[in-house]
Image 1 (tube, helix red, strand yellow):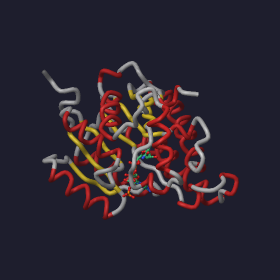
Image 2 (cartoon, protein in one colour):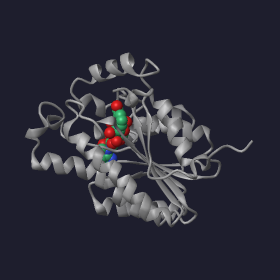
Image 3 (cartoon, protein in one colour):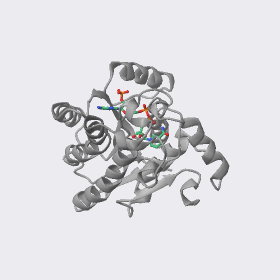
Image 4 (cartoon, protein in one colour):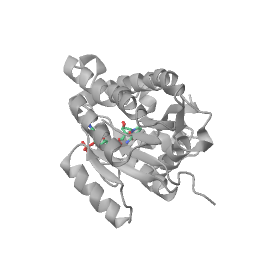
Length: 257
Ligand code: NDP
């Protein structure tokens, strides 16, 4: 039987280490036969990624530097992808950032700089990346980003990132409308809390995880591999009728009042 993503070229943005959601996604996509192209920002992340790929015997098609804060860096990265790979069929956006001081205390004290930075890296980046990626998705494609329930409800401490995720989810819908005519779909996965490098910056993370274990219909939290499989689904032909959607992978937590 052919694998779900056999022969498909997929760009994965946002592997920082083995705990990253993007690493869970990488494993799912690799098992589904995808050709993987990675982008990362920091040298530290690049080194960790290279080691992880070696350990898991995954041969990347390319690893390219990309800082989503810089238009020049994004243009350079997609130019390189075009030169080295040509057509791409999918893209995973698993990138976010906010200042640590804006992820605790009260949202009302958020600085202008902190607000704009979180919006720029965590939400606007999807807009500009979609614009760059669509030029290479000449056979149609699928883009999947990562969001959190803090976009829909107040999650104490998530603050500026909750507002950025709300912007990200609205962007998913507007982008889906724009690129739908080119056969490109844009969706988000809304994952339950997972202990990653980024999650360390969020106040009371342990409590958030505990509440999910107590209240979610499945009475447990989820892991990177479950997000990986859901992202794989959205990238694959199985989800060909789905766009502009936010798919919760949270053991059902979001349905509980
Ligand atoms: P990680 O810290 O593992 O990943 C975050 C990634 O964002 C890193 O690879 C980092 O790259 C990248 N990044 C930050 N700023 C930039 C930038 N300017 N340019 C390019 N890349 C950048 O954390 P997660 O895996 O938790 O986060 C991945 C996504 O999942 C985020 O959107 C997050 O909000 C979302 N999410 C996380 C949840 C959780 O509980 N962990 C729950 C729901 C959603 P580098 O290391 O090179 O700086």
